[in-house]
Length: 84
Image (cartoon, rainbow, N blue to C red; front, side):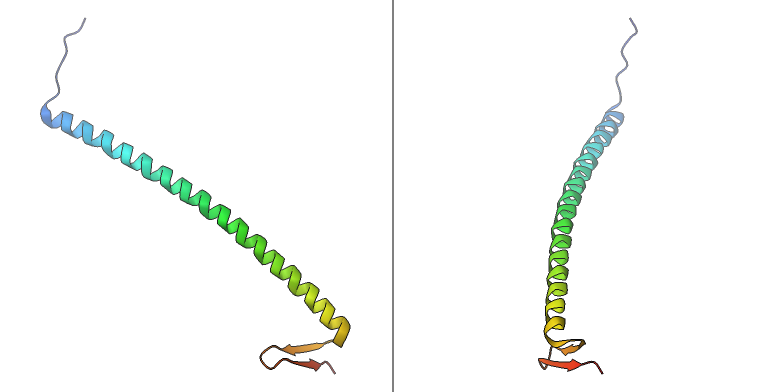
């Protein structure tokens, strides 16, 4: 067998620091992945709600068009202005 060679204290310290840094970075990357997953999930939920609102808006627009005809709505005043 070969004879063992002991690292210097400085070399050992540097190696341990590298291992610690790698471990910290791996942990932080894992946290980023978890955060990304949470954000992706939240984004999907919000996009689903946006689609629901768009569908409701279209349905309401179709209903109002059927009732009042073509025109423009001034939501601030609550007035319907028929198209000419």
